Figure: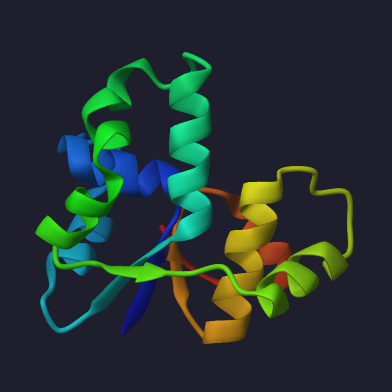
Amino acid sequence: MRLLLDTHAFIWWFQGNTRLPLPARRVVADDSNDVLISAASAWEIATKHRLGKLPGAGALALDIPGAIQRQKFEELPVTVADGVRAGELPGPLRDPFDRMLIAQALTHDLVVVSNERIFDRYGVRRLW
């Protein structure tokens, strides 16, 4: 299975936070699955950390590429096509980071590990 961690799932995984449910942790830990982290999540973490909105994620914010590499996750770059698809998504969803994750999940046929039920409205396969 190819998984895309939503930003909060990535943060909670990195922190070992039990707010990430056990079934999600098991799937992420399963070496037979590919786990991807979007460049949009890196942007979101860095931005929110700079603004003081993620006080518990300082260690992650200081070395996002290293954290991805140490976990043997894969980076998912944002392409122009991803940007177009995210911008064309219908509906009132205002969060640009969520729009990008939805677009990337649809384009790359990824299962999103997230508690965001709004993803379901866009036909995204979601675990959690």
